[in-house]
Image 1 (cartoon, rainbow, N blue to C red):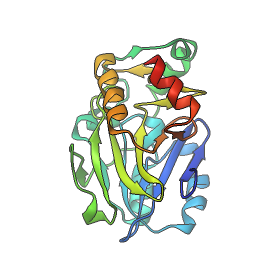
Image 2 (cartoon, one colour):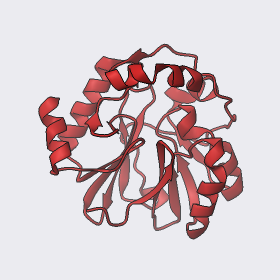
Image 3 (cartoon, rainbow, N blue to C red):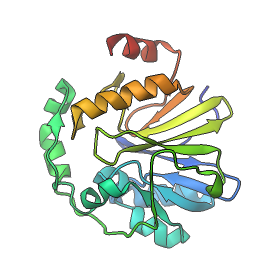
Image 4 (cartoon, one colour):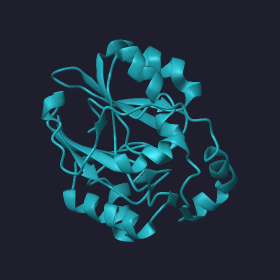
Length: 222
């Protein structure tokens, strides 16, 4: 069930590549300190589009760099553009004990230097990704941030959902550690459960294989 997952491990954050018929899609771009690692990893791919699941620095800090390097347009929700320029611009809630333990680190993250970029494409709920060479759509996963999105697409095992931070898997599937709207974050998880993808590719932690015990435990807890 882990075949054909193109995951780039960037410390505590993951980036992904979705293979496409017209080129490959880079999902999130990691922190600046992982730039060389990501660039080396991407030598095996032809990046033609960058999709950002949300506007936090650990997911977007290299977006401007890779967009220029590969001449690849950037797609992001319009609701997260302000956040992408200033991670401290909106209040958020800490939603679980792990988040409270990491509070100081998260506060530092909110003041990280952002590398400005101008998106070429604004992501919207239900946007068809066929023009970009994959059988997939954009899914609204508002909650972790106002503009959090996911990518639901066909894969060799059925359907994959690239969920950003709507669900974290650190070390078990869980509610996001921080959320701009816990109510919306819960609704996003409810939607993911309803969609029932075969695999959930998280921004933090290992992929979640639906039907396996950790996923079942998460559903039972929720």
